[in-house]
Length: 371
Ligand SMILES: C[S@@+](CC[C@H](N)C(=O)[O-])C[C@H]1O[C@@H](n2cnc3c(N)ncnc32)[C@H](O)[C@@H]1O
Image (tube, rainbow, N blue to C red; front, top):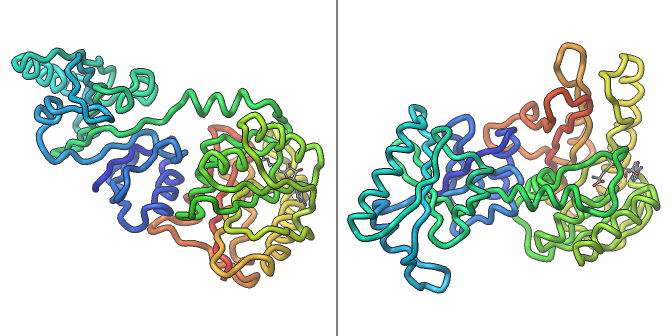
């Protein structure tokens, strides 16, 4: 089945996540859109980088609306809610509204009533689709149009659930940084398709965001951290989800992990938190410190994992006064250490930066396989 994905704020990162899971079928068709093939209906709640997903409609939209059924196969005969999101280059608010009104009129001729969501733009925002439970509540249908192709929305990012997981977790620490749950999911997905129940190690687990997301995605979380306070925080946050993780205090550069590791997903040590771009001397010192820890970890774990084990690392990159990010540039060292850097179709390492506007310490994502 062919699907359409509306990519997130950093489309290259979203694209990388889709390529890791759906392989070469993923094609970018516009700056914020990709299409891909999947046998199963992709679960939007596991895809941190995707805002909306729709499946290709094979027939015409009216037939689809007249034959709607709920999950149990019971025909839907109550009022339908219709939304139109036109992602075509020449789409606009007026055209989308007209399309929705046309559907409403035809439905009414068939004796069916419908409410149309009003468009502020050619497409409905993620927030509008989410709050109106499009694709979720029976009879709440959003069509996504790209030129001549029509897709039916099958999922929209659950902004409320992400915000809750981010903000309501009991143990938080601003100094350690706040890894957004969406990014934790992306790091896990960049390991590629994994068997349910796979053990995912985060050797810099901090407050446990990666462990929490791994648990919610049906994996077995395994966390270690240098700081016993952080390990305690991870435990609290997992307890809050009624989840469990194997947790230990340990230095990633010399720890011996006792469980079999199927994948590694982590945000490594990122150096000191910063509110201003660092002076050259400070940057040099920070880079050296981070490099020593990250390379020390990769050297230590190499003999402890099997060939082909995936590892996804978010490492620091620092904003310079010229507005560009300076990277650790460790990728070249990794081949000699027994790792291959995974090539994700047409994307390059330069595309793998995750940051908010003006953020001083960004994260560069590196995807590896043990060779
Ligand atoms: C950027 S934080 C990770 C935050 C984490 N993603 C979270 O959800 O809170 C980096 C973590 O690495 C830990 N750390 C620093 N050096 C370490 C080392 N050599 N071995 C293991 N952990 C280390 C710190 O204690 C800190 O918790």
